[in-house]
Length: 312
Image (cartoon, rainbow, N blue to C red; front, side, top):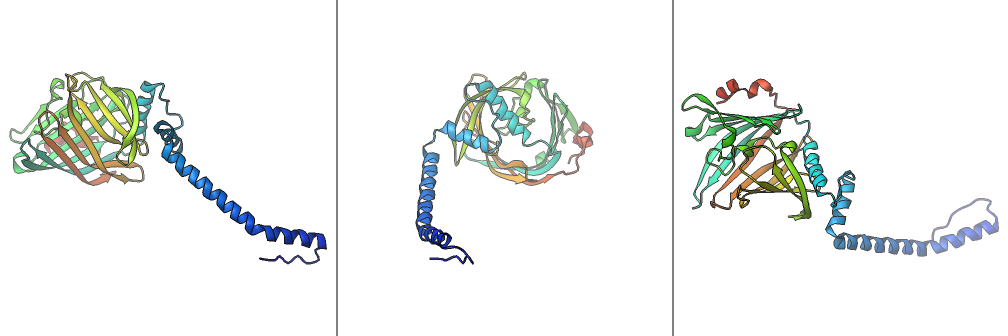
């Protein structure tokens, strides 16, 4: 037992101190037991809490206390999409390399190497600009796609074909078609602005080791190849993890799975593996991203039709 030294203390004070010292181990044991019981209660609550409540706690911890509740699924779905967009504001411009692996229904594969550049556009009613350039194989070297995204008006898209040395404007009615033989459509490569869709939150559920918001989004722009998309967005980083695409007959057409997320500049998440599976044809396309560079020094002059011709 530890004894305290209190010079000149009177007998009553010394008696009180001694009694407190003698009771201290008992109090410490009681305190440890209390903490142990509390820890078990918290652990049990995390296991048995309903999904909706645990998601609400996660939202609160992430500072999303204003996310609309499940009783307003339209507002909740929109808020989730806006939060995803808000977390990527300020990337300015990026460049990256990409490997495209195409697999047909018989399991045969072919590969292509590309570069991708993106310029952030902050003007209202406009979306980001992007430029995709093929480097390999030789028969597609120099082929390039330029996209100027808009919100509800048709996106502007041009394609440069080096074989004929000509820039071709992509018609808005053809943007649901496959891009360079892949399972991605032209519209999949356009910027996914919030205002392009209406939203409806469906549920929250586990997605791998995470929890996800599951929302349905319906294209508001004309000539989309999809009647609707169902997107899984994780409740921690608010990044899309999976998207199901439904064709014009409302049949499940494709599923896009996004994995291997990495964080750049302590803010911007980028998936490095995108796998698009076509359920109707048995084909799939994998995009493997690498060498992301933020603040790559790109300007509007790098995203013009003249730049498209020089992109090789």
